[in-house]
Amino acid sequence: MPNHYDAAIIGVGQAGPALANRLSQAGLTVVVFERKHFGGTCVNDGCVPTKAMVASAYAAHLAARADDYGVVIEGRVRIDMKKVKARKDTVVNTAAKNIETWLNGMKSVTVLKRHARFVSPHELEAGGETISADRIFIDVGGRAVVPPIPGIERVGALTNSSIMNVDFLPSHLIVLGGSYVGLEFAHMFRRFGSEVTVIEEADRLVAREDEDVSSAIKEILEREGITLHLATKCSGLARNGDRIVARLEGPDGPRELDGTHLLVAIGRRPNTDDLGLDRAGVKTDERGFIVVDDELRTNVPSIWALGECNGRGAFTHTSYNDFEIVAANLLDGEKRRVSERIMAYGLFIDPPLGRVGMTEREARQTGKRLLIGKRPMARVSRAVEKGETQGFMKLLVDADSRKILGAAILGTGGDEAIHSIIDVMYANAPYTTLQRAVHIHPTVSELIPTVLGELSPA
Image 1 (cartoon, rainbow, N blue to C red):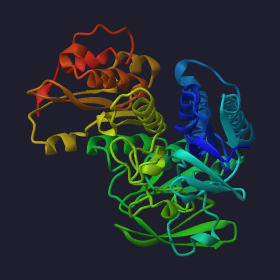
Image 2: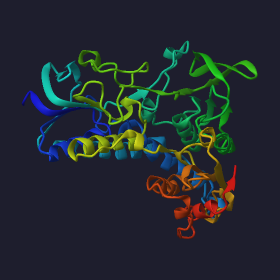
Image 3: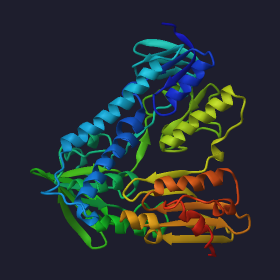
Image 4: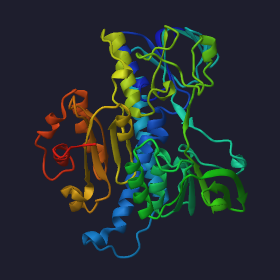
């Protein structure tokens, strides 16, 4: 095995394998380091497993509602969590194995299942060997933050990673954190049959979103029997036999809440604390994220950082776009930049939220004259036909330029319908381009032109 390569990639998240493939196709020698699971967070304890479990939870929900559709199920609907986990594991293991196989089949790519640490800007130590490379790309992802709440080390708190190993139904799941990760797990486990309580320090759920979105999400969750404690802090944790006791401080004063299991979902931190970045002279910010420029280069000319560890996007799609930016600039002579990216993401409760661009609050802060269109999903034919009418769609337009500034679709199919808006925004086209489009009936997307035709000053 050679000790010098044209390029080294630390971590096999969503950017790493695709970058290795492009570098290999360009005739470069590449060494890839992965200390744990191929595919990173998305494949192993993020998007892939959670969406597999969301699918199982949705099936349980439909079965429970079968009578609403004229379908008769004799007897009680029962959840087999071992089968739920086994199905999830199959999906995950297949995806991870496919990535590993793909990497190992790449010409001029060496895959090492080792943890790599910097020795210098061009050298890495891994498994007792020193390996050098002309260029080094970091794609190490992140992990859940476990807060220093008194007693938390004694109660066996779960994170988004460890909860993936649960093959039983928690009797009462307490979720610390009322944002994207916490709410997805809260919703799915409620549908599996757990009692679920969510504790959130902010005065509303997913506080990044507009108040009407937060309010609608709250209504969706409460409608399914999830208990929410907002503007509430967990000040201590203790174990009482097989129960977990959480001490809460909220609007109603101090109180105690007991449950059987605790999920911590209050944020993430980058996996950069054991890379020897200081030896390479790579700068990080106060939270440990690697500082990069608009082309994802670090302050060290030979080192780039991609994916969640650079703090420029915590999503699979932004990580993959990081790869596209770096590959295009290095190999295709382009000048692509992170600042050209329009932020878009989803919240995969049911119904899901699809989001792109500015919130209404952010749009108002620009001082632009706004046009806003909004329609409840109860006035969307497809939603009515499916019996899934919760939520709404909202679009924001710059009245002067006629460009779409942002949109939120909280409702059935919202995570897919949002893409027609994303595409028009990337095309830098006026909203009338989408307004005049003829969409297929009956779909959720067909109402987007209708909403744009009903814009009003705000």
